[in-house]
Image (cartoon, rainbow, N blue to C red; front, side, top):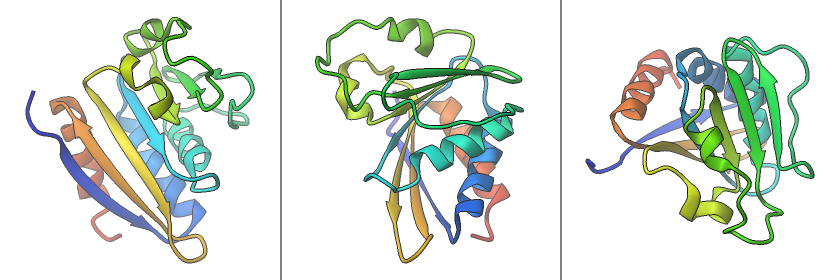
Length: 159
């Protein structure tokens, strides 16, 4: 596999973060996997809400903190995982069925299941700036995610 490519985006508000994620949601395909890292309150769930909107998912999207996985239906299924409370990294919850299935998977706190993640994925690190400012660094592992990131870069070149 080629070296990972990184793309940096800056948002100035929660709305801009969701708009960036919504553009990603319009480009997703079955089997896409996005991982989200960042401190508590960085905007991982905010990003997922925008992604869901781009996938034509209506209704409330919130963190699956205590359920580990929440499923939403839109243009494609969205599997939103928060694996922070996983006690055993090797615990088998059938992740492959999600990662290689017919939907899109978003994993918050992916370091908890690092060994189970697919090699090809898009890692998104979110850091807080002042106020509602965020820096989002997308690392594309695989050509599919490079294409998505290039499209987003072209769409959000003003940020």
